[in-house]
View (cartoon, rainbow, N blue to C red):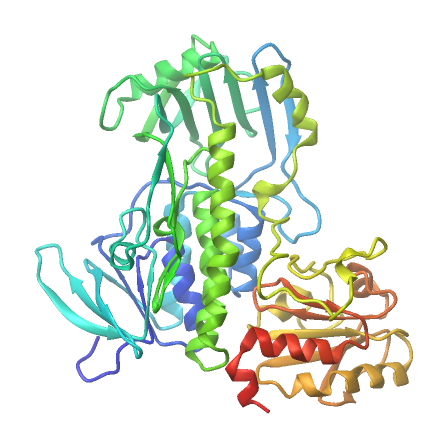
Amino acid sequence: MTPGTPGPEVLVAGAGPVGLTTAIELVRRGVRVRIVDRRAQPRTGTRACTVWQRSLEVFDLMGLPIGEYLASGVPYTFRTHHFAGHPPHVRDAAQSGTPYPRPLLIGQQDTVAMLTRHLSSLGVEVERGLTAVPVAQDADGVTVRLETADGAGELTRAGWVVGAQGPHSSVRDAMGAAWEKQHYSGTQLLQVDARWTGSLPGEPSHCHLFLTREGSLGSAPLPDGRHRFYIGVADTGRTGDPEVEEVLEAARRVTGVGDLEFHDARFNWRVRLYNAVAGSYRDGRLLLAGDSAHTLMPVTAQGMNTGIQDAFNLGWKLAAVVRGEAGDTLLDSYGAERRPVALALAERNLRTYWGGTGPVPPFDRLYEALDHMGAGHTGLPLAYPDSPLSGRPDGAAVDGAADVTGPVAGDRVPDAALHAPEGRLFRLIGRGSWNVLAFPADPGDAESAGLAAKELAATVRRAGVTARVVGNAFGGVVGGGAQTLADPDGALRAAFGAQRGAVFLLRPDGYVAFRGGAHDGAALERHLETVLGRAVAAAH
């Protein structure tokens, strides 16, 4: 930072996928950001190599140009399950209702490179070789010591600090947040990226999961022609990165394939498994995201994805607070929404992982359950119905009505085609503001549209809120400060289940914050005041 220039409004500690996502989301919303990382160079290795559908949606909503990124990865097409005593079971990885129906298999270093390039295009460079250690915070900001590897350092000031440093977090230490590890004792995870030969069953382009009495083995194709192998077996007591032969021997034992061979292997490492979730994600002006907030066993490929979605959730909220568009109570919703996600994943990891030690899982029952597996791992069904940001009309039971279709408060917004320059709803939401969509009772009647606009007149006066009345054919402005959005084929109305008319408040991260009837403008206004706090009151 140049002497004499003002300190950052937000200092992001950590330049992995989570820290970079946080910084991008803040910078694109007009926040002055500084991002530092203790490593002199970006971390090497494919590491977290599965990017699930919701994370790809997040990149889309952020406006990232990810065409080249998608092209450089491998689509995750099918997963074949090989359970002891049963024939292979193939499941399609595709999900409907999203512009990204399939996950992406790509090395973490490529995700970091894509995010770093985009942050640089926004005018912010990562400062390397610096560890951020918060010293003290007060009502106006945080004093931080930036330490180099040789122990030298400088003091700086930042309005807020986000810790995205990984499991070993100086920001979490400064917060004094609880960090209790739940060890999965008696087992270990061995991993390697390698080309292979032998009689390993199944289509090589699929992802595979083997469950036998000896443990578990998963594999996934990588862009360079190698495959990631991750093998859960009983702990041998060995330490340090395993030799390739140790990983190969474990793979042969679990799969029963004696002629399996690895070639051109790299990135072989050993993991002793544990989960940990911070007791709090916020202490005043200090916040946690990603592995600093939760370290999850890398057996369900959720750690990086969960962290990216943390960063997206936090970024727009912190930007609104920094820019004076919301009171800082908005940040309380961050931990309220995201910490339960991490706790649920930690519980799921402990419940579903098999590493060749302890009681043997009931393979028959697990195999039968494959046909009933949900899509929770994709991130698409995730909802925040109990969030303080999720509201409904006073005295109404819209969310509980048996005949209500489409999203309700807390649900993810469905992407839909638009008859507008943006082309898709995600492109419109991704501009970064709150949005109100009003569906009049009669989509083809201009008078009905005018009534809907009048209902929203008080709301559209609120800073940063854009209201649009959705109808069949009318265009332009219908009064009350509302814009119109053409929906001539009724696709948007159908996607939102708004056939009888409705009003929706859409959050900047693509979730529904409020659903009410076409005449619930007053209830919507009260909810906005609750959500945005002092800033809304000041906008009167």
